Amino acid sequence: MTMLKYPVLMVHGMGFRDHKHLNYWGRIPARLEAAGCQIFYGNQDSSGTAESNAEMLAVRVKEILSETGAPKLNVIAHSKGGLDIRCAIAKYGLGEKIASVTTISTPHHGSVTVDKLLKLPDFLVRLVAKCTDVAFRILGDKKPDTYKVFKLFTTDEARRFNEKYPDADGAYYQSYAFVMSSPFSDIFMWFPSLVVWMVEGANDGLLTPTSVKWGNFRGIIRSNNRRGISHCDEVDLRRCRLNRKKGDGISDITDFYEGVVKELAEMGY
Image 1 (cartoon, helix red, strand yellow):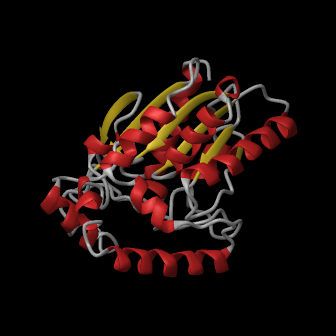
Image 2: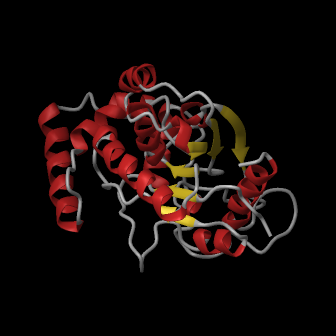
């Protein structure tokens, strides 16, 4: 059994909200709880800006610490959730309350592909963003602002974000990247993956390894089959093993997460 010193806060990415019966993280939380972890969720907006979500996450961190009596939390964040929690820690001085931050395919350095896509006529980008805002407001978002989120994913805005919200002293930051074996290895991600592949190269359906490196970069995590691991696979969208094969690489994404918390436990977190 893995015994982490501190509870785990799991922070979702864009396009989803934390729901009890439709969990963003699939089988992963149950696997971590079985390994002895206390699991909590961020409950921030799906399509809010990093700053507005940071405010929600800062409140959430304090709620969890008050509820558990723990002095600190470990954070596991996927995709944009990594930017949300980094902003929360820096903006609200939470460094002493956070033991570790593990980001999974977070666009820390933005996306060259998004740079090019946002050269489309601005009124089209704003129209898509406004429609997305309406949808997520219906689903429960309090402050959706998809247009600003799109801008955050550009390389220039990412650079400004990183300068404005530096890592907290004392907290441990690490990051992981994943890649699909080809743009067509995940039916859910084939089109965006193909676009990114043409512009930047190998990716997980949305992001390249170069864009997600932060803190102690732990490298590219690979599966032991020909499909690779997609942005959807990273949070167990299909609720099943990647494959039944044994050997080098990941055959079940829950194994990866249990390995992450086991290492954190060995490091004293």
